[in-house]
Length: 123
Image (cartoon, rainbow, N blue to C red; front, side, top):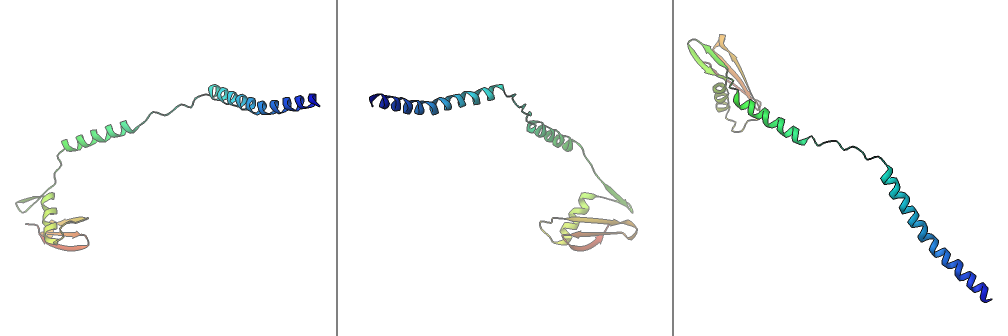
């Protein structure tokens, strides 16, 4: 009987040690797989390039001066002046859309500012 108790105790000890040994083996296998697996190439970040491109575009736009002049019957007016007059004539303080149509043969400027239409003389 004493021998049976020793054998049973030894079997229980082996059972307790076996799961611990299996865990260590599993951990070693996982570590080996991670080490053996090829590392994925990470793509370089492109955010810096986008920001740089945006900055250079802004700088170039500021350097260019663009003007449109309408000359009719000896008078000259710019497109910016026509837009200012259309905004003032419409009475809308903060317009979202401004469309200006120049019709020199009738000496008139027609506008639509936030769905408010109107007109004023060109000269």
